[in-house]
Structure formats: structure tokens, C-alpha cells
Image (tube, rainbow over the protein chains, first blue to last red):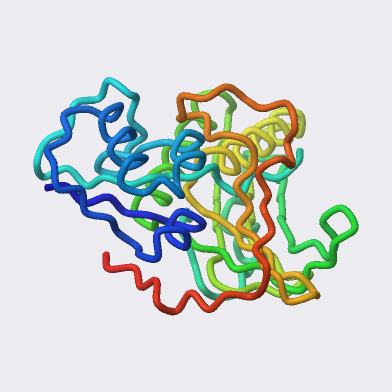
Length: 81
Length: 169
């Protein structure tokens, strides 16, 4: 079981600030797939988002441990230069 | 001083905090809430953050900026919560011996902040509709940049009460 923090539009679409995935996920890439399957409404946003592990940006091959704090980080507010 | 705040940003105090005798140049950047996005009228913005990560990334950006330019002091504050048009949402102050490096360092810091610090804004438009601003793709995502930079700003039909979405951190 793994919990993932959701923010901004992802939280609104999911209706919750956190989503619980029942299965064990071993990598960030697998986490993306499970999130998309569990919450199809988030699919396009998940693809455009970063994943943070313990408050640090992760890459798709980052391994995940059972006590890691996971968060979906949608594109940030940005703004034109 | 590097932090998030729910209070109005005292940018005079922020600017004073970076002044040093060896620095002949202080650059202050203020980001303020703009009233128009294209032709759509904005009345307010709601800013939210993933606070511990946001402050950590802000510290990393400060370190990178100080590694690239002779920055004697750098201060960076971002405001959260509801901001009306004209209010200051973010302030970055940089002090360097000379102005060219102070301008360059300040621009680098704000550009990095806008791309990497996990802070999001929701537009509240004059017609009552709202929209999260999630432009393009996050640099940490696996997707390539789309060509239409406005493709992903989807308007939601009407104002939402997201009071049910409690952050349980």
C-alpha cells in the first residue's frame, strides 16, 4: 500500500489531497502507471507532472521504499518571462 | 531569508536584509497579481504549495545562484493564500558587487523558482469561473514540451468550493 500526495488540479480532479494505491510500487515509472489506472481523470496531468520522493524530484527509474513520502507535482505556475 | 508566508511581503525589509557594504548593486524582483490573462479578467489568485519541498527547492536555487555569481546575499519569499490584483506574490532580492551580475543572478533565481518550486496558482476570473494554471509540462515529467503553451489551461465551468480537499499532511 502506498500513499501519494496530490496538489492543485490533481487534488480537485481526484477529490482528495491523497490517494492510496493498494499495490506495492517499485519505481517512479510504475507509480505513474498505477496512478493513471487508478485515476483515469488524472492521466494527462500525470504525464505532464513530476514525481517527488521525500521532497526531492525523482526520475522514472528512481526506486521506491515502503516509507517514502510520495507526491505528484503538476507543472508549477510558471509565467512568461 | 528564504521562506513561504501567508502575510503581505515586506519587500522593503527584504531588500534591506541583503544590503552589504561590499555590494554596489542590489536587484529586487517583485511578482505581482496581474489583472488580465489574454483578454480574461482576473480578480484574485489562490496560491498553494507543498511547503517543506518548496522551501527546500528555494534553498537549492539560492545555492546554485550563489555558486554561479558573486552573490553576497540573496533573499526569496513567496506568498500563499488568496491574493487580489496588484498584491505581491513573490519577491527576490540579490546583492552583488556590480550590477550586471546582480541582474543576471536575480533573473536566474526567479526563472528557476517559477519552473521548479512546487507552488501552484488558481485564477479566479471576473465571471466566477476558476482555473488552475499548469502550463506546459513539468521539466521533471517524461513528456516533451507541447507547442501550444496555452493548451493546458482548462477553464472549469464555475467557481468551486474546494473546502472538502483538506491537506492531511
